[in-house]
Each structure stands twice: as structure tokens, then as C-alpha cells.
Image 1 (cartoon, rainbow, N blue to C red):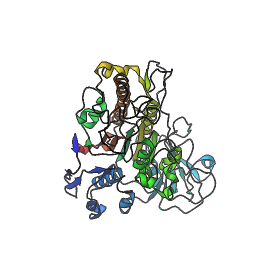
Image 2: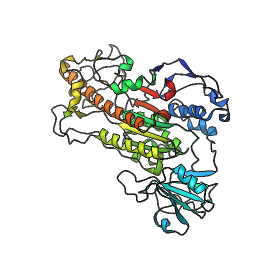
Image 3: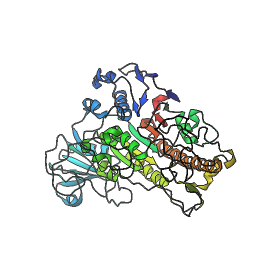
Image 4: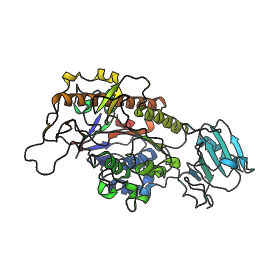
Length: 513
């Protein structure tokens, strides 16, 4: 475990054969911005950096400078010319539909394991001008051409997002400009700008965000209440930021700000009204995954990354193929519960949204493993957000009701002034408070303890799912070349007046330990 506290610095020393020596980074985090001396990057041509470490610096910049700096993509624009081939690559299909029967289209190989292998087949054939590799079906779709390599002997470069087979294509050299249907419309239009290949040895990014998860973990010295063994084990292998703040302690604005890389005053998202893409000029903004997509990455997301509706349809332009992989809601009790905040579930047939999210996340990792391009995959778990719906067995791993510790500071300080939080919003939304009380009159201790215990159980459930996700990353042998970021959109009060703006933030890559 390595801690990164505001104002500290840490050093990374080059390994034998690497060219850029020891770099010193600042650890300040303000509005989710990991700041270091950007001039270090500006003073050095990326050509002088060992490719893997140089790319790591660029990825760190893209990963962390997402808040106080409006968007880091512009800072890194001049470092994106990493093409070491003469191929034009795209995460779309150049062979689809009726073109399979064209005399200019040929089946170059079956059981071709990767896009790179298909590219090699095309390179070895003098008549092959372009290829499309079909890795297999999208989840729940039907693709008849799994692991096939198709190539064309003409100059057609007419890209399309296929609905069944996730095609990846390449063209020898620079393709001609020709009419091409956009990914969302079959009609004619200008060809999309070619997507450059990702840098050689580019690292993958797995981004995991939890909903309303407060700091209560062993890594911060909290013991005996919350049960989060997988997060604590992850923290022991990670760089931990203890000065990380969300931009707005509300789901929608916080997520829009983090993933768009802009402050709420720029996104004009302060609540749940509208969406940041409706802000003038926002249609040209690059979100975090979109920035990676435009640099040759496979990008995919599932679960609650953005808040539903902000932006519309989870921002199709951020994702490879303009398709988000699904959001499954916040869940509800299978039977009416006497508690407004949720319930333990004993029905083995109950379908939990986060389990659905995990299933698709594993599928996306497997799909990315079989591809030849690096990935940015985002996974959003909805628990421990209310209602606290979880398998009943998780009550066994948290303290009994009589052992739940209540909030140390249930009341705001006296003379706090006019800026105060309304905890209830008319429905006890940031509880536990009584339905007919305000922040100056907290609910009774029994109700508060029940809320806290259910919250801890829901968090233990989501922690187990996080552990399964990391285990899948290990099983697929992706851990050593994948940056993993784990965070939450904001904290949660649970009856205390302490800040919900402080959030947990972990960063893991293999050279931290």
C-alpha cells in the first residue's frame, strides 16, 4: 500500500534500459485532479521516453487530470502520434451484410484468434487492401462469423457499426475518402475520421465506481463495523488518495463532472435536471472513455457510470460502436418491506442489478482479452445506494443491531450560519432522519442503527462483487497490464454532519508494489 497525501511527492525511478530517469510527482488531489508538474511532460518529447513508461505518464494524465484542469486531452494532443505501422485501424466493420457475397470480399481465415493475426494475414497477401476481423457476438446477439478474417481486394473503406458481429478493421495506408454510413444511421454521409492505432504496449484501464459509498474501510483505520475485505486487499496493493473530493455530493452532477472532465459550473449540472450534453458546445467535448476511443482503444461501459439520463442513453459517442452495455436500475424489495430504506432478500431467484452488471463486465473483459487493442472499461455498481437490497446472508458479516455504532456528530455545530443541509428533502433521502423531522432533529437511535446496519450489509454485498471482478481480471491474465481505478461518486451521511464530499479513491498498477 502506498499513501498519497495532499502536498506529498512520490518518485518513480526508471528500470535498467529506460531513458527518462527518476520522475517526481505531486500527490495533491483537488476535485479529482491528480496534479503533478505537467512541465515534466512538456519539456520532454515523448520520443525520448521508453514507450511503456512514456505511455504510462500519458495515461496517468488522462486518468487523473479530470477536474480542476478542464480537460487533459488537449494537453496530451501533441503526444498522440504514436503510429508505428502503415495501417489505418477502426473499431468498426468494413465487411458486413450483402458485402459478404461481393466478388471483392474473401474469407482470409477461420478460427483467427485476434485482430492482429487477421492483420498479419492481410499483410501477407498482396491483393488484400483491407480486412475486417469478427471476434464474435455482442451479448445476447447472434453472430455467424466468430473469429473470422475477411479481406477486400478493392479500395472500399465504408465503415459501419454492425449489429451482431463486433468488427475490427484495418486498411493498408490511408484509405480514400468515400461515402460511409454513420454508426447510428444507414444513410450516406462523410467517412468518419480514421481512428489511429493505440500506442504500442498501451495499458488497459478498468474504472470501477460505486454509488454512495462512504469512507469506512480498514485502509483508513476503520474496523469492526463495515465488512469490505476485497476493497481492503485491493487498497493494500494500491496508491490511496486521502485528499480526494467530489465536485458535487449528488450522483448526477458528480458523475457528469468526473467523466466529462469539467466542473459542474461548466457542465451546468448541479442537480438532476437536464444533461451535460445539452450545454452549449458540449457536443464537441471528449469524455474520458471517448478520449481513449479516439486513440485506438476499445471502450465499453456497464451499470451506473453516468447517472441515468445525464447524458441521454449513457452518451453513445463515448463507446465503441456507439452502444452502452446496459443499466439495470437500483433494485427494489421483492415484497413490501416495513423499512423504507430496503430489505434483506431470501428469495434465491431474485435478480440483483449489480450481479447483472458484473456478468456483463466479465463478458466485456473476455471480449477485450480476445481483441488486439487496449481497452477502457467502466463498471458502475449501484450499491450501497438506497434502497438497501441485498442477500440476507450479508447481515451475518456485519455487527448485530445492538453493536452498531451511531453517528458521533448527529447535529450540526451551533451557530453554523445560514448554509445548512436539508437531510430529508421531504422523504428522508440522506437519512437516517425521521420523515417529519429536519436536520436539527435526528431520528431515534433504533432507526439510525437499523439504517446503518443495512447500509453496511449492502456495502458488503457490493464488495464481494468487486472481488469477483478483480478475480476475473486475474483469471484472464490482464492484471499486469491494466490500470485499475476504484472510487465512488460521493459519500453518504448516515446520520452524521460530516462531509459527504470526501470520497475513497484507489489507483493500482503493478509497479506500485
